[in-house]
Image (cartoon, rainbow, N blue to C red; front, top):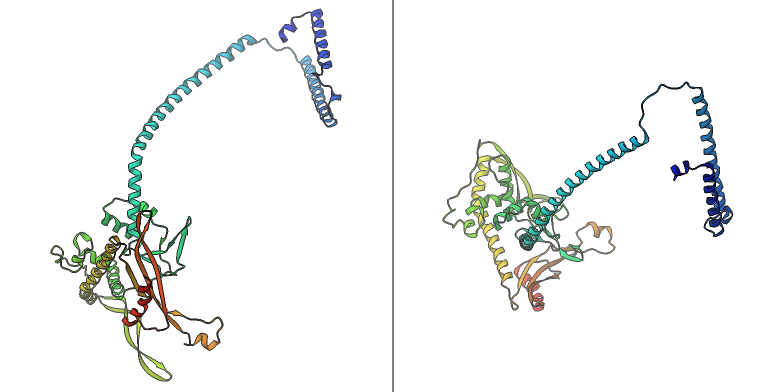
Length: 441
C-alpha cells in the first residue's frame, strides 16, 4: 500500500486522502472512534501525558534530522561503491532463512527418531515389569514378614515391662522391644538362619518401628552373671589378639556344626563337632592381662563403731597371666555352653507352645519385678533421706491365649501384675501371687 501510494499523482493522492477523511468522519459519527471527550478525566490525563511524550520524542527526532542534514550538506560526496539492491538483500535473507529451517528440520527429525526408540524401549520395560510385579511384591512381603518374625523373637530382642513404655506410629500403638545385639550382627545371623540373600539396607528398612536400639536410659539391669563374666574374659582375650571372637556366644557357635547353635552341639553330644576345640593365638603365656568380672564377696564395713562382714556384689578388675586366663575360659566353657543350650531349648519350647496353642491352652510367663519404693506426697527430712521408705513386691505375668477374630485365630497377650507388702521371693510367695492370677484365667 505504501508503494502504491508513492506511485500516485497529486490529484489521485488528494482524492485518496479525501475518502480517508470521509471514512473517518462516518466512523466517528457511528461511535466507532472515540474522542478525548468520551473518556474519563483520569484516562484523559493519561492520554495527554502520552501525547506530550510522543511530541517531545518527535521534536527530538526532528532536531537530530536537521543536524544530520546540515552535516551531510557540508560533507563532500563519497567515492562510488558497489551496494546490493533491496531485491538482492531480500533474496539473500530468504536463502539464509531456508538454510536455517532445513537444518532445524533435520535436527528435529533425528531427535524424534531418538525419542521414538526410547519410547519403544521404555514400553517394553513396562511390559516386563508388569509381568514380574506380582511375583516381586509377593517376595518382598514374604521377606518383610520373615524379618519381623526374626527381630520379634525373644532370642533377638526383649520386651519392656513398663506400662508406659510404648510407641505409636500412624495410630498403631505397640509395646517397645529392645534389640539384644547390634543390627549388623543380627543381619549376619538372619542370613545364616534363613538362607536368604538380603542386603543390610533392606534388613534395616524392614525393622519394626517398635523394635528400637537400647539407650542409657533403657540399660539392661538384669544381665546373666554367667554370660556377662564369660563375655568379659573373651573380650579381654580378643583385645590381646589371642582370640578372633569378641563375644562368648560367638565362640560357642564356632564350636557347633556349621556355626549354627544346636542343643546337641552345645551340650557336646554331637558326634560331628564334639572334637572341635578353640584355637588360641598365644604369643607369650606369661604376659599379664587385665579383665573385669562380677563377684560376690565378703566386705568389712564399720557400723556404729563395730566392724561387720557383709556380702556385696561388685565389679572388679583382675590382673593375671594370659595362660591362666585361657585356663579359666577352658574350665568355664562347658558350663557356659550348657547354659546356652538351656536358653535355646527354652526359647524353642516356648515358640513351639505358641505355634501349637489351642483355645483350651495357655502360656504364662512369670517373674518378680524390682521392688517398688513407696513415697509420701510430703515428707520430713529424716523420712526422705533415711531408711524409712517402705517397699512393695511386684510379681509380673504375661498370659498368652488363643483369640478368634473374623475366623482367623491369633495369639492374644495379657499383662497381669500382683502387689504385696511381703518382700519374700520364695516358692511359697510365688504360689500366693499366682492364686488370684489363676482364678482370673
